[in-house]
Image 1: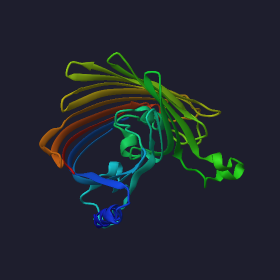
Image 2 (image 1 turned 120 degrees about the vertical axis):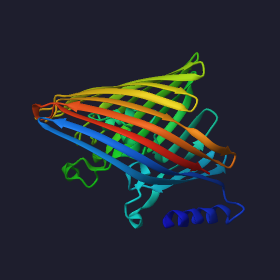
Image 3 (image 1 turned 45 degrees about the horizontal axis):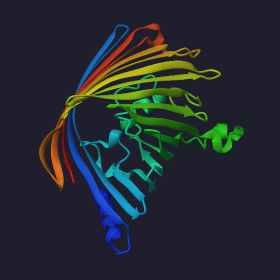
Length: 350
């Protein structure tokens, strides 16, 4: 926390040190979370039930600079060494590291834009990266929690027809020190991918087809593989509500690795209430694989209650339920796992 306050003070000094400096705006949020977790595991003749209750906190500081003529810079500081930026309260707080979780800069123009840096992904609402990077367990927003919902990349977007085309070159994993680099792979030893999306409206319906194409070998379910993932998000207004449908398919057929899988999502939003249901299935036909198929079910439901809201900030309470059911046939025997999480999150934004 001391590091966070020191960096905030440094930002403030830089923002106001000179009248000629760019206009810098600061915002952020601080949250306290009470989580109850209840798990149940069954495999062969073994059964295991575990319950847990934890408090955690998360503080995020955001800076945005408008440099004129459409040029901008944005950054976010948070505790970057924890899952989703959450720090459990019984951890040693002196070991908490404050880092730039994301930062990016670029230019917004009338019909196009470009930006580069550590880009936010918004993967909670777009599961293509979840399926591509975790095809065996793509549910319960793994990219947002494990990978902190960001990626190093270079983005260019432009208006085409009635929609916007975005192309993003991303670096999914860094393997420049890997032994295989000695075999002549050189600078292309890292995991590069191209993310393509086109978002358009058909009447009142929003349609966004996408593709995530591996350009070089990357890491995911296995190391040094080139999976390809594609699908679409669809959003349909229904009175005061919005209904979302997502479907994505991933496939990897390399010399040794052979798997394919899909993820389906049905989502509903009305006012402060949000809920969705996910199902994913992956078949792994890789020779020697200990598990050959994976089935995952997931339910997310939350309600955001605004206790106080003004132009200066807000205070809200968000009760959330997250249920995950997972099954496979590990070593030829059925393996079943379920996890229920109940959360109450108190958040202040400023």
